[in-house]
Length: 333
Image (cartoon, rainbow, N blue to C red; front, side, top):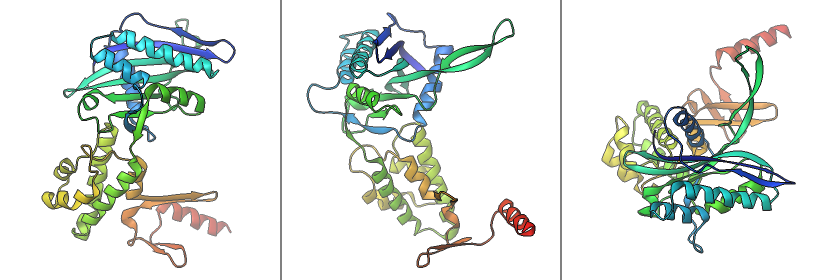
């Protein structure tokens, strides 16, 4: 990672006493342990399925985050000053809502391939165990990069440029509607992308083009599409149809691009992928209380037949471990 700015603050709040802040006065060094921690937090953030994408609201004078970033980029305020103000504003909202929390707020700017990205990642602490210098087991605390992590990422270049692209990635906090409302107000996300609908439409085009391929090619074609889209999603990047066509082996690239023109978004550089829709393209799955079934879509009409009229599945050649369990059960009966 190439970090140009980094600072961290702490916010603790109780219902009775309100918010208490511990604020840094200067930036942190971004190498060594700091870089390792930021990399872990960033990976966790980008791995989340429920990230929303959109742009700043166009109503009013802009959110606190939008105003702060403008002042920072224009040189009217330092990075630390902006981060302190944003933390204080979040703390005021938390106190007003009487929310209990104990979090660290990591503010940083990353440069990558000529682009600049602002991150605000907010992490809880978790209890852990360690062995101290006396070789005794002792309690310790660590930054939790797990499910409690939430935050926002702003693509500064896209925001300052086209502005019609979803340059904000937002991960809301889990388990606290009130905290989510405070954070959402601070960020000011306006129009949100309907990633699920866009991904479904895109995959409809992908499947339509597959009709032009031979049976031997289709599975490989689908797998390559999914692999490329998954890699883009992991980078929080859109899928560009032209670049995707160059990544797929064994197809007519111009024909593919032309076939998908009517299925791609009319605005922005490409499709922001909804991971759940992408998974369902190559894997069918469902569960009820006493039954769970999943299988690759490539097996449909091959090893697996579905009778829609009678709502039944016929499986030819069940997995070995399942067969052994069934035979052992029948033998025991």
